[in-house]
Length: 493
Image (cartoon, rainbow, N blue to C red):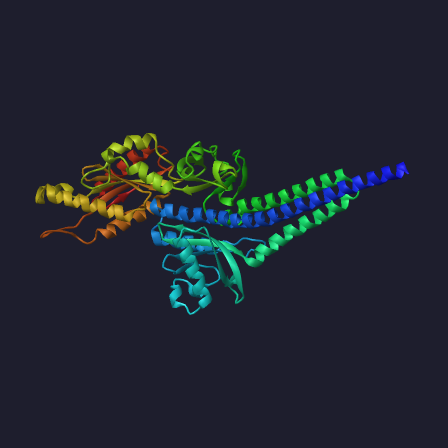
């Protein structure tokens, strides 16, 4: 009888413990289940915001290219619209980005092509008008998210949508992206189902053994954390966005380990790229320059660094490289005003010594041309030096307007000019000389004076006539002397 009472007490105690565990487990399950629901919604909205941030960086990159003079503003804006309209993501690759200006004109949208460049007030579509008004109001109030009813992926089906928005002030653009209600519910339901299955397993194991419940509960939470981490990793990489960019782009983790990059980055990766510059840590919005030695010569890049994720660089960095070789060569050649001829506004002979010692690559073939104006002394003697100066200035202007941006033009002395043509063999140099002669066929009018300008030219080509710039200049000078000995408007090699 005592044993029965003891058994009953033990059984009651065990039942009470079991009930306590069940009640405690139920409270835990309800709490975690509700937090999972809230966290998934928040995570997906944060994911939309992060996707928008990376798209915003793309817009800013094109804007900076315009500010730095690489493109004009309409071209930069058009390139931005094309990139944004071709960026899709999501499990079915249907989620998209759109752009609206502050007056309600649709700038970019992959599905509503008929509405582009039109004010929402001009479009007879109440659903569209209401959505645009909600977005404009949210942007005006500096809201980060906005909810509205809209057409699902360009179809006639209406569905509630939540979008992350951000205003790019320099162009007055409102940029946005987001998820439809079905997408949100599908993702929430998927996670909830996984959690529910795990919870059922937990409670089944409670009646077998208490410790098994704890182990299974821990595994379930680990599984949820792993699923959420996988979602965030997929969000941050956005490989489709990286691969769509023509510039070299690389993604690094917080330890500066390369975790993803596009094809353009692969092409420069083996040319001695430096490690992540310390400036990336000091100010991620401040670009810095690097130069790389490639088989075709030195190339210069501007490197922009941007964080992925929240503060403290917790998720890593994105590097975007912009090729500024052509602009850099021009800056190196022309930035020193002391080396500019004040009359003709081109480089003078002072720059030659520096160029001879530190000349950048001009390709596997380039030509050096020496030019001397025919009868220039007679012009000075007959009309005076002021007229002679006008002739020199006009001649230099014709040359500058006839050359590529990477060509170097130098006033070598008096009426003698030195021209260096990159990537140009003798045939190209000869065609260039002929083109200048055609431009000078019409006489120069100075007041009542008409002067027909002719010239002789000597051409030397790397490496046929020499492998050093100094030797090529001497060779071209000798060729010029031979041309002048033959008469006027002559060219010699």
